[in-house]
Image 1 (cartoon, helix red, strand yellow):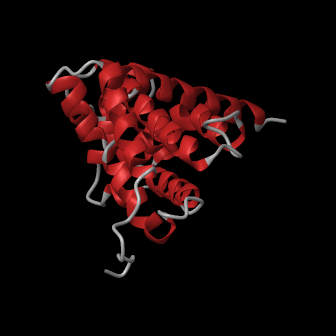
Image 2: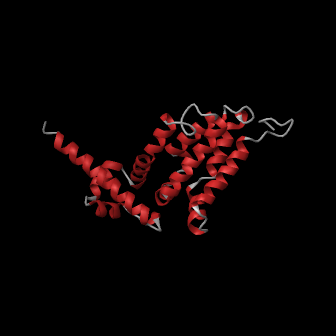
Image 3: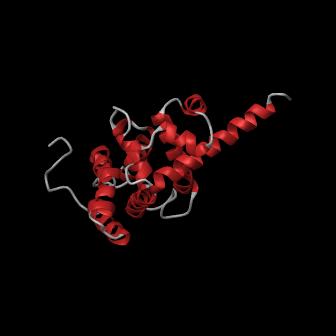
Length: 203
């Protein structure tokens, strides 16, 4: 019984930290400049609380990213077509990329901070592996793309990297719906393309 209060406090502190970090990254023009001290101050907790709960800045970013991504995961794993399972692959691939693009447009600062954090490649991030594995599995259902599904999944995800999204939406000021339309047209061309006659995955 005496252990309940610490657990509740820890949960409350974690929620406060995630909410504070979310707000900071949402309004920041330079997400790379936001420090653990900034987040702790905004959340009204000590820095030690952050480090115990998340390990480091990268851990905090990953936790916040995953919390924001959870509704998208649920829609992908159990939602209706065209995003959810059971959808025809030619429809599901564009829907998946559009969902990821919209998520990054809605969370530009956070997504950019996560991809730029640490010294490891963004390709090693857990969320990247999840998206890549999902896309590859759907692409394998398209006969003309099955042999190169691994590469094609990487190539499609490159079109929605956070730094590219930030450049187009932020620096270039391209309207959201135009970015979505351009991505949709590109992905549709990819999933409906056929390899050159006589070519193979080994060529």
